[in-house]
Image 1 (tube, rainbow, N blue to C red):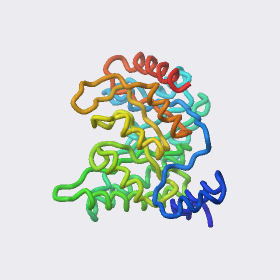
Image 2: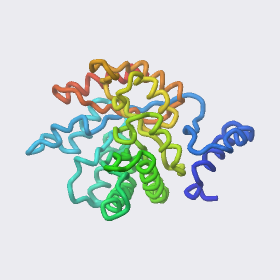
Image 3: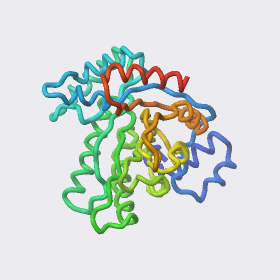
Length: 303
């Protein structure tokens, strides 16, 4: 069976069987979306989200271009650059995207991924169709840039909509987009970003409902606000195919506090995470200075 046509359960089984022998097949035969199959050990690559420079990229007139952002990533000695979709020209074409890929390559950078806005809780109709078309269009854009993953959202329940109804709609839209993503070899990574993904256990019911090997989680370390933020993130880590690190957290009932980057790194090692660890900065101050400071701290934590 071609890889692109494998369902998630079949892919998980084949991956586990190849990694650990046929006994793993029996153990996984009754599950839906299981944690991402990994080989033993971890491998971290460091990237930076263009979102970290949003004030400069969105200034009028702009004080930074996407090419300038790549220069920043090169200056900071990063492995990759996450090119957030919000800062691209309104009218995009393949020539621009492939040229940007070449600009990254010449700087020794991968395009580690991109990030988009979408809402998949909308009921059937023109608006929902537009959201799905938007994600499919960015799958094709990601392919042109050799970006392996797109951060997506699930959305928020509409008025009068139960969680069950909203999550079913979101999972169905994700699956439809994953079928398109399979044609281009691009992964979709669902972020814990409020709405129906604000609670880790509810988010995991959505994740487990999606049947595609081209799907996983974008673990955003700053987007849970429960009393046990690190416990919630530890539940999510085994499903992560991309990680965005924020340097602040806000547990329920407590003040905003610095994130324990060492603890986050240990969590990812425990999950045998292999992939990009992307700094996404939301602090005040000069973006260039702040990013340099926290890139160095994150680099030390994941070393």
